[in-house]
Amino acid sequence: MAEEAHSQVIDQVVQEALNQANVSETDLSAVAVTIGPGLSLCLRVGVQKARKTAGSFNLPIIGVHHMEAHALVARLVERELQFPFMALLISGGHNLLILAQGLGQYIQLGTSIDDAIGEAYDKTAKWLGLDMRRSGGPAIEELAQEGDAESIKFSIPMKQHKDCNFSYAGLKTQVRLAIESKNINAEIPISCASSQDRRSRADIAASFQRVAVLHLEERCQRAIQWALKIEPSIKHLVVSGGVASNQYVRARLDQVVKKNSLQLVCPPPSLCTDNGVMVAWTGIEHFRMGRFDPPPPAVESEDFVYDLRPRWPLGEEYAEGRSEARSLRKARIHPSLTSIIQASLQQQH
Ligand code: KG4
Ligand code: ZN
Image (cartoon, rainbow, N blue to C red; front, side, top):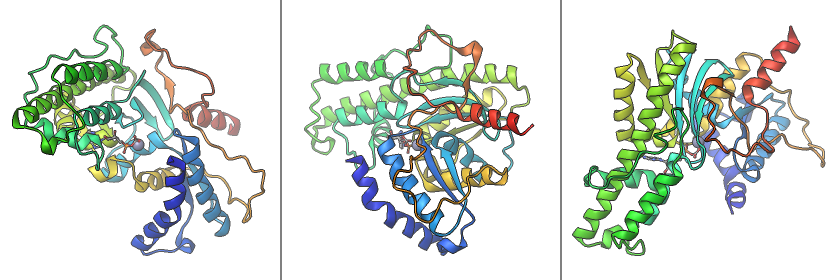
């Protein structure tokens, strides 16, 4: 279904983007496209379209890492933002804490060992019977404003693990149990709930959000200490990805960042949630450094194998931060972006 949804709209979406920018393909200098991480079925739709466009108009092509794009778009918004900087990337599929030392040079300080925070927002919203038309995150954020965030004592994930990794599977279970114990029926949409029912849903939303974000705060605090040991000149923490459009998340993280005398850089919501601008911008950054592939042939051969990277780490793990709690499947993981770039630099020398 996801693949079909992508295939159905890809041509129209690209055409609309060109129209809105008031350009045609002949005005382009290159084509950038996400090649991972993500569902390969969906990645393929984008890569096919990008290669077709690049092939027809003789344009170089740049394969982009989705999470790098979430981080680098901050440099489009904040032109002062120089390397090295830190980034917390929070979306539906990934949580990442990275130290960006240069373009394509990342140290992974922490990652999600199970569900990402956005997934926990989406499930909580679904179980609370919220309107999911815009996705669950904004619905929880709105409802949480009516609730008492102290009313339910969810425990903060991974307290005993003194690292920078994230886990939201346990919090999700705690939320599900709380919803069951309050006899909330997700079949009854919140718009039809009694005022008492609405109140208890809002309490759960607020309590969930408080603890979900406390987990981010703790991880960021530790990651800042680690990062300053590696790169004492760091001035900025970038927060990006869909969940970074949340005002409560921004406000709480701003406090953590200020306490450490750093500055928060958070792109506007339209550039935090998945968008094409971030991919184009990351393409520009790499293009300027000479990192691109030559134009594909105008007609691709039938047996061409697309370079798709469904499981593709951004950087190498910070050695001191490696945790035994990690149970990540390592099979079929592509070498990290950073290790690929380092290998190619060594070849040039
Ligand atoms: O980065 P993104 O657009 O797509 C992925 O790469 O996953 O992130 C989507 C996630 C969804 O889980 C959505 O619920 C969450 O971002 N999200 C929010 C908010 N807006 C979007 N979560 C919390 N509060 C929001 N305001
Ligand atoms: Zn994303």
